[in-house]
Amino acid sequence: MASAYLVLDDGRIFEGSSWAATGKTFGEAVFQTGMTGYQETLTDPSYHKQVVVMTAPHIGNTGVNDFDNESSKIWVAGFVVRNPSSLTSNWRAQNDLEEELIAQGVVGIQGVDTRAITRHLRDRGAMRVGIFSGLELTREEMVVEVRKAEAMSGAFLVKDVSTPATYVVPAIGQKKFTIAALDLGIKAATPRSLAERGVEVHVMPYNSTFEQIMSIHPDGVFLSNGPGDPSTMTDVIEVVRELLLAEVPIFGICFGHQILGRALGFETYKLQFGHRGINQPVMDKNTGKVEITAHNHGFAVKAPTDTEFSTVYGRGEVTHTCLNDGVVEGLALLDKPAFSVQYHPEAAAGPHDASYLFDRFVDLMSKKVGA
Image: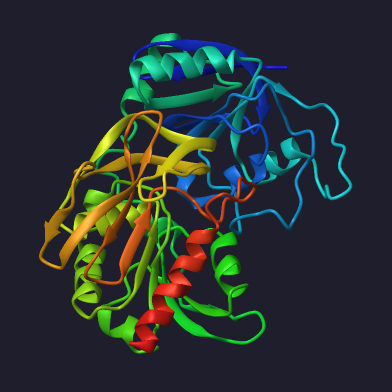
């Protein structure tokens, strides 16, 4: 088994062994704290250009299948595990995890202390990283290559993950509403969750114009999750502002939440190490209820959490905050039909505390239609 190295741009190096595809890869180093759901993580387009460190010690036990994918391919730039399972044992498994990573050319590393890496990232912040597997390079050469890699701040990545053409996910049962979903890196679970509520979902390219969106006569517009820096999304932000003026009901999640925030006039900023995994506690400020939620975001919206705010579209408020660090996790306008959350209410592979937000979107559209 060949040696492999995980190299951070501050010069810290962790030595392990080759696993999955060999070669080299670069991205932003992030950690994921979920104990399950690695397949959903791998295929989530929000992880594009990110090297994911799994803190759970055993990964791969249940293999992979064709049913739990969130998109058509693996998007992570690299995969870091401590102890990959030597045995695949699950009645739904159709392939071994390592074999799938090799087939898709995803470079990995095993045998490193993933919790030590996580502690380092929590102290120093998310940073550029490289995995070098089966290569003969000096430590200095590896560090230099990592420092030449693209940083996440200022990265425009949506064009890589968005659909090239509109496709339709039909409503399940009686059709109640039609929506346009801007694909900024949408997960398969999202249109499925809406379809289950009688919503016909037109998944549209990220660069769709206001006129193209309105041509389907949508009852609402959904802004999806996705990768990259929200400050680069100027054209999409302008489209959202047009939708707000037209009073089209809007629901945004994750990247879509950040874009709505910028459309309202707020800044976004880079978090020290982001929120990722399926165990993030978020409080609904209106009810006091605490939800355990699924996240993958490295940026956040800077908005006042202790008072209503004013925008050119009327009054608004922060609806949700993270109990770990006070980060804004939800926004809502009080005079227009628009709201967003920073997390993933479809939450494959879980938890499902926040699935009610899809019902809230349906209610918002119902009120608009009945008005």
